[in-house]
Length: 293
Image (cartoon, rainbow, N blue to C red; front, side, top):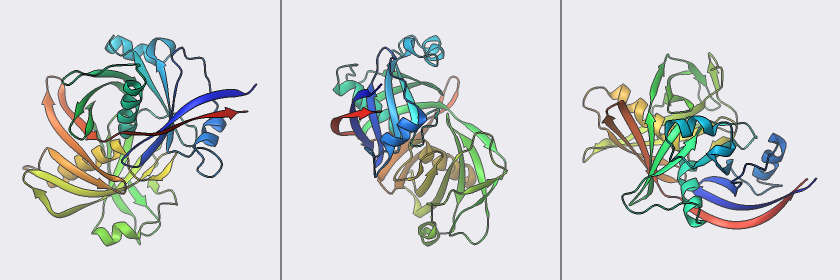
């Protein structure tokens, strides 16, 4: 039976998504159907797909409601290949914009929109750049996995960081080396994480710290999607890694330049440990209707 789907295309610093509303959790798409929608030649084209479903109507939403009963909406995120992802930093800003523009939620200045995700509840607020999302506590997975990538002559050590989804961050010598990467090939991580990982390649800009703000540039290969113009959680992981390597005195506020623009990262103390927030723009590009076999 064919599925008629009304969708919205959205993007945050070039990280783009197909979004649709399914409040009652009635639409179940297969990985093949999702990959078809995200295909840039034969489909709509996107780095991932986001379904807006009420938390009460999806199994994964139970944990969100237990954490905060205000988490009415759940961001059901899938990578471009149809695989399930725990979290998407750019996606949650675009998801918030989608909820607000479609009258599914409200967010006045100073208020907080609570969103359920597979990595826990995320608080979203408006700010001057668009939206800021509190991604909660982060975790240093540590280790020094070796990363091989097309364009690098030798494998480089990476740093494992988890911000709701897994990342391995690799520092490069300079921007020329960053530009030399061919990320149409999947970087190889040794040892390979059990659930895979996004891989970020990062260089500090000169000077790295200006007016108390750190500045870095990043390229990323996203698990299940390939190289993308931006990755929100990847930008957060990259900033955390550079701060970790820089040591005492490194700033807690960062500007991360990506191919699709720039995002802000801020680390700050809370009662339950250090949290990290991501801020940046979100845009809804167009709407349409599609029929899926």
